[in-house]
Image (cartoon, rainbow, N blue to C red; front, side, top):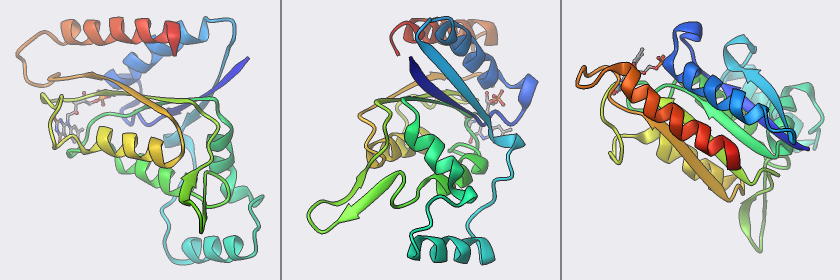
Length: 197
Ligand SMILES: Cc1cc2nc3c(=O)[nH]c(=O)nc-3n(C[C@H](O)[C@H](O)[C@H](O)COP(=O)(O)O)c2cc1C
């Protein structure tokens, strides 16, 4: 059995095209006998940024090696997953801030990464692959302004996760092509990926 973690940051919920793309992938992926999917809907979680007392509590817990504190549950869950799927739309040349706040909470020394004198810092996550599913209003494929995909690829490396893949439906708000046509291509790509991911 392969344990996959699905991280849903599709803020517009049922109206979200990214969510539609993710659900198409998850239906095909979850139909595989050997795959078990755990869902984490960020919009339903009490996730807050590192600031004030919440920041200092973290420093204190890390200093005392108290890594089993409930606030680190997201980091443990992320570290243990064998596959990770993230779905988020393209917002303001990046992904929504909620996903960054989640990453802040997951990035914990001693859980998802470690450091030593010999190797510097290195990821210790179990997953072999991360898949990022996104939809974008403009044509961002290959653009240096697509900060979200680049950042998540860098974080995958940081977490020690060897492969980072993404599927993007581009240009949904430009009116150059029917939305159904653009999404159809992304769905086909997602269904193909679900066979081997
Ligand atoms: C708050 C917000 C910011 C956005 N910023 C951008 C942007 O910087 N560039 C872009 O191409 N599209 C941008 N868009 C358009 C979305 O990327 C596009 O509509 C996407 O398909 C939305 O995904 P969703 O249907 O899953 O919510 C933005 C949309 C919203 C709501």
